[in-house]
Image (tube, rainbow, N blue to C red; front, side):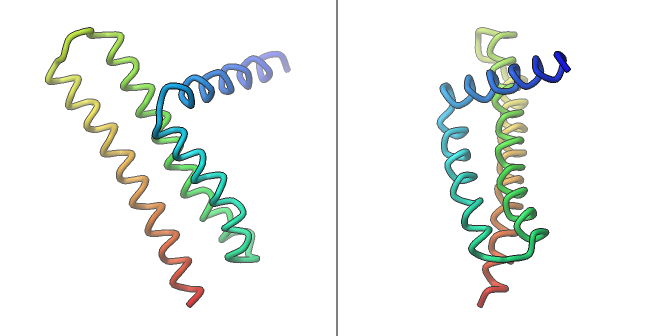
Length: 114
């Protein structure tokens, strides 16, 4: 049980650190907080709600991983490096793909409402 508690504390500390240092994380948490009641307003189907909220949560997960990669890359090399730049670009591309997926899911759900 103590391992679970320590893991939860580490996770909370990571979210707090990311929230404090990254505007994108703050924005995505706000979008997540808005998406939950919006998903409940859009549908009574629990599965659809889970997909809507899950799509936004996926964006946050990918952004957290991208942020971790960028922070690690900055620790590994202090000076600009072409390889690190490409790695950071790949992380950004992953975030963009997650955002596109979330937009497509929400757009499809909104289309069903009309």
